[in-house]
Length: 291
Image 1 (cartoon, rainbow, N blue to C red):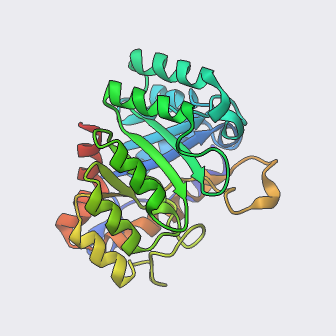
Image 2: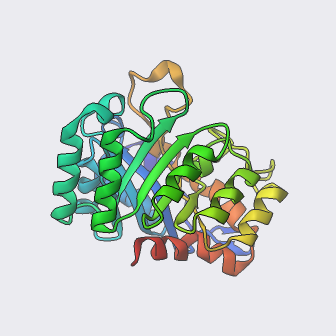
Image 3: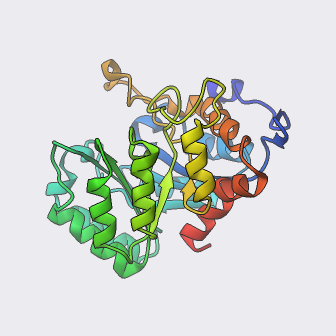
């Protein structure tokens, strides 16, 4: 075993009035080529089991790495088709017709249960009207699977237009839109009942912006979650190089930080009423995935 397991804790330590071993749906993880060099698929599966993860959504780069996790772990690991079909696929996926061909074949064969994570940043290519992306939306609707979409923007407008244009498509709004405020998110929730908001990566080491120093939700975020308890999910998103710009040429040690990310999410979940906590930590993801 490598250094990961030296940092794992026995999960009987209570977090407030809730045990950390309460069942958890980690609704946003990745297993990428640069993770694989640091952490084997067997080790990732063991980490998830150690933390009582009973359901997880995984995207890989290349996309077939998500299938490797399911093969090692079982049917509680839910692979999404990533349009990043080679190691540097995030750079050119929107120009590559093979992405659509691979997505269609993978969905047809029952290998993938969703599409994503697909990234957009306002002011940069691609745009959400890109023909490859529109074909992926059509496939998601045809095969009735959800899509995980990441849009970094200064407001809710881009995502809101997208969800309103595709009302039959179940959408996960990754990272609660990055740096968006609760009023932005509420506009989306009000106008699109086909959207689940994902709190992954909204932690003090990456996006943040949702929590107080004790890692419980800021009042305006907590108020929104309590108002829409059926519309939020969360996950650890153990990709670490997003803020370490000088080390893109090294392996991603994100899985070695899993305990810290997991504890962070349980800190704010544990501050919610029990019924709301259970919905966000487990039940809403089951409903989203129709399991």
